[in-house]
Length: 499
Ligand SMILES: [Zn+2]
Image 1 (tube, helix red, strand yellow):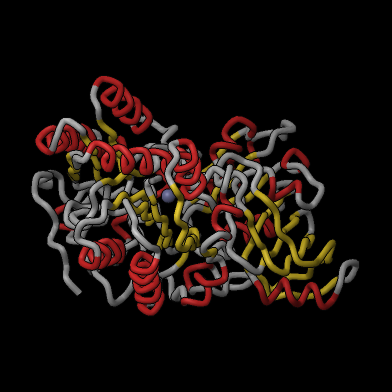
Image 2 (cartoon, protein in one colour):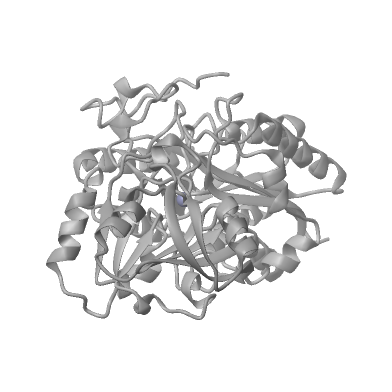
């Protein structure tokens, strides 16, 4: 009899301070279920894609339950968390005999009524299925502690940011789960926390000193029978366990897992200053001065409005329109209302728009502009870049508009503009522009680092500041974390903050 491995995915990265809750309907819009999951994800660079590949390669039966994944938005509604937890328990109960399950969770999903969403999901499944082997595949930006993973047997996370190894992460989780089932033994699983909170902009794994720490983790894995996940954490989700962590899965046992995790946590703690300052962060004026001081080279300069959390901030777009430093492209600006107005007016028309800046006061507010409508219509595509390669993205009703020398693609659904697709879907190329304004934190680097003339990280007074001390935490105890406190005791677990 082939081993039967269930799969379920519930994945959201939450910025606690974003006012718009992510309701159940939004998760349902992108949710795939049952046979639709292998049809959609086989041979894609995604966690379910990796799980399917290993099940098929190792002769196990892949039993798909559901998969919903929504990038980085606001808090999940309590209803959504309860709905998918219930669907998970019902799905496992009615799937027939199972040998194990791969759960794909983020680690930084946040909901008002839950101290720790992922812990709730894992604990609920463990309570309903005391003997079922559970493997958890996590995002590298997950906030993790030992308590969260107590109900899991196996936990692994992405090793790269940009997350170009989503498929590999699904493979690692599934391979370890099958090994545990076949060998009839549980590996050691430990979490250690260095007590460091860094902004997402500093979490790219090509930056130093993170790149070296990652290489050291790979060397430790090559020398020992273990899997080490260095976790950046997600500063903008306010939880008792917000911050960096190290997960170690170790086939030599629990003591070895704990020693390795602590070793890497201590290493990170020693590097806390460098980790918090891995890239220079500019003001808008400094970025404009940089643009003015350099000639165009035929390679675009990337301006990164990293503090934007809802893809609709207008701080930098306003500066581009006022100072006109060169032909610029602003891909995937989120404003369904403006996209609908542009569509109603039609291509070839010129209209006034109140554009973007509507999701929160911190976004900079809407821009009152006059725009030429170049193209409108529903738009979707399959990702060609390595980040989520092969995945289907639906932008909804979309409008390509021109304001002076600035071109903007206005979209109706939140989507990451991190590779060339944001241009090629309109028959354009990034090289057509001197300036590209992105809102990504790390994922853009895979495509843009090799091709951009310069990358200018610009801080704006928005919901995702580079200085994490500006974040109004309610659940994180900042008296025990860098950069508030010089020497947090890294051997102590945070309070679990029951809600
Ligand atoms: Zn992430």
